[in-house]
Length: 148
Length: 355
Image (cartoon, chains in turn blue, red):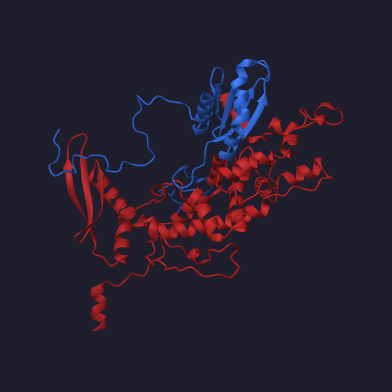
């Protein structure tokens, strides 16, 4: 019996095969999982936050059932709202100095975010998981071969 | 983040998380009393996650109205906690675990993935089909899906070392049981077609590179045998374009033709390389032929759409099976090269015999 040749191609191990996520292609999983409001019971800086919590919080929680909403008392400190995301990131926004519409905007910002780090769009080239629709130009695949 | 912080974060992610808002008192009384050694990890594993977390999970994956929090808690509890529960809380009733749901969901996912891939890629070789099924619904994918759903913090499991009868239970194994259990729950609470839609949304829409699963030792010989099997003319390779011959950066574009049809095209820095790539391209174009998604028909569409399991009677759906294609050429695969495939007679030979 001749000695066994090494396989010409690398073997595939089925238990090590995986796939990449495509959130939004068919089903969309919202990335925010919990929103925590921290306010002070006494100080005036939390007054607007307290009235927001009394008037609008329940409707917000009902409109977004996929988010856990937590209200925490944190005395003698300015009010904040924290968002926890599925990529284990946290976003913290201070609510001091905002009117109720401002607080609503900041909470909506947390609910819309994915938790990914904010990167500047100015210098980034195209990033995609799929190849280009029209293909990459080739000088050999035109009617007149491209001459350098 | 440094290496040490990353290790710490990944270790912390595997531990059961207990939100403070769900506890009546913290630290727990067992921790401060001097009766026995307090193991914080075991204590946190035995704490159930809050119901609000399960309700949020249900709505996040679109099952808010279908499955209740207690069923979801069962889906997120791995059987490895039973030994821990018996050890630390022998008087309490054991928690509901997802062992049976895991097995049922695994079978369902395997069924849906196989029929979907078979209908979508009718010419895909068998071994590549099996590898693709593992890629779409295998253990690593299931663990990823659980993390992306946000169920990793709701998982209750216990790391178990390997014994002589079963392998070790690690974080990936425990995590992968959650999406399978969820599929089984959807089947139990609704129907098989609904479970198929669930599998389609979370598993079969994921991105898998099938091209990397097709590997050839000799694509030219493989192509010659395949073309012969389909009863077409012998493949001939022709140089389509070239540039830079005898320079340090030549480019050759070779096409492989069967009669007047171009089967595939390849480029390379040598004629042999370009011909090899052209043969590979031809085989890829055959094996990766894809049915358009709106024309995919699967056998499980015959099950009735009404609520209930597969054993309840109902109106059968229509199913038109796809055409059977030719099987792939087994060439130099896993030591079976000594087996000779029966050659198909060409068209002209058959006509002569009939006369």
